[in-house]
Length: 201
Image 1 (cartoon, rainbow, N blue to C red):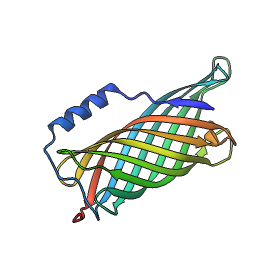
Image 2 (spheres, rainbow, N blue to C red):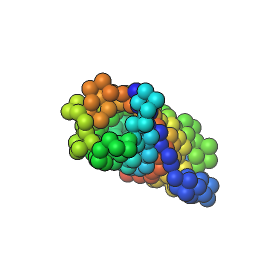
Image 3 (spheres, rainbow, N blue to C red):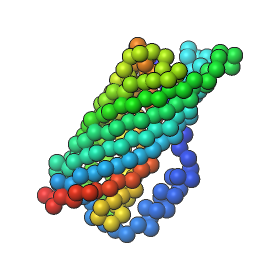
Image 4 (cartoon, rainbow, N blue to C red):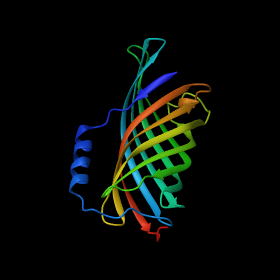
């Protein structure tokens, strides 16, 4: 099993906290609302295999979630997942390769009661991704299960928010290689738009 760990930029985190603390108090969306939420993350992943250096992977992730509030707290939805990675082998093991992946997931999110303009949330999902490029070392589809995320959204007015959180996913057939496993940890930042606001319960 290979472990892949995300390093988030401190500047983005600091800016997000500053923005959240200055935002005006706003109501959280309720039942019947629709959310569109793009988010991004950067990852540097140092790999090892049986205790030996196995290179590194640098990746950029972009996810776009579309969700629907079935109640004031429970939200169902799915995401489009796009990732581009640069794979650097250990010294003397060959040239750098690249991999692009495209996937989908579906899951459930729980949005906890707001405290002022702050809304904590957790999400669980499962999905799949296809891989292409010289860094796709196999032809298998990658299974993403489970996907678990949690974070905080800062409401900005009634129709938008700024979001921050952490996410974990387990990959089966990672890099397209049958039976290759990976655990991926990420810190993400993003925004949400609510083009449809429900009336709540």
